[in-house]
Length: 485
Image (cartoon, rainbow, N blue to C red; front, side, top):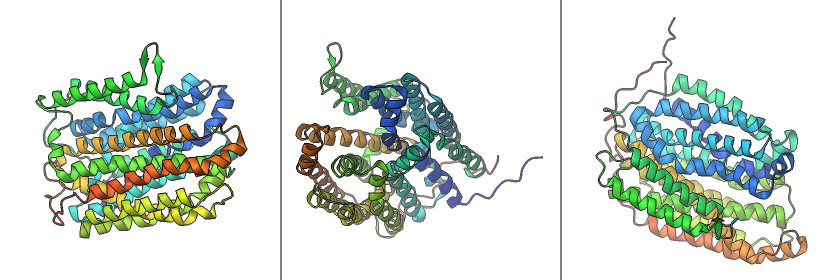
């Protein structure tokens, strides 16, 4: 007998999306903690471990626009479920891997699954929440993303210590299966009013360009920004990536139905919000890179203790972001963004100035609370303001672009801040020299992060004030939600 259709409240839909969002973004940071154990177990050098970390990021970042548009074509629910299934199966493969090559391949497959499901979340939120509640929904969703990113070291340290490195991948399996069951029950079928063509050349140019740029940023430091294969070096790869993206823009201006509608950038708030997404992600991952080194290599904390030291940041972010989302619905995101980015920059400067070689975790508490408040005030309004004026027919493309900007910012932050530190730090194997030099070496790196955040606060002032409900109902242009199996 057919099952009676389940009642789908918007909040039930949001809960399913948050579960999947937490799972895939946790995997961008949790594996870092297990890297030394993976190297020992698989007898792999540092280069192999870096590919385990970066294979996921490369696939994830380079395919977001493509899968965002695919969701517009075949329906976001279908692509979301397929992506979560691929991610879960790839997690099993990761846990069962017995060689570096096998693990890297499984991680790339994980990244493909993550890239498929993430862009659909913003589309579904825009579809099921009315405009006056969308900010609160984005607030909760982005708070989960922030918590996932900063809780990776804590949860990873706990799992690796208690159950070994394979446990960080086994964790994904029951959570992924639960997500699939809940998605089948609660996610609505949201279909575009008409079928979209698939821009194959646009896919090839966008994917190739993003892959080259993200590869260059992620791997540049490891190759000392020099040769990678024969005469081909990191600068050549970056230039090739920029050239492919330039061709992509040229083609999209001429395509009958482009993969990425360039008139999205005619909306000033979307353009500014996309730039702020890059800035916020740059700051998050650049700061996290310094914080992990500072607590573990300078202060001698274990991975678990280092993660626990970040709890003031995590807790504050979790508390503030949903509130900021509701405020964005009432007063708009412009003021919240300006204030949030500035407060976050002050917190980063606090971490740069206050800690020294003899500091404890207590030293970080005040600055981390400020960083949590700043991130909480800014991350939800960024997404809300970006998506507020986007029509449902273009939500997938806009979502894919925003998520690509987030991953590009992460890669750029880790690469640039890593390069600043590398040029100023002594060899970490000389423990005493490293401890004495880190406090001085980390300050320019954190000053860069703070400067970028202050620039973002200034950029947010360019956002246009909008009326409270400037867009038509969320379901306009879409078929009515069908409550079927």
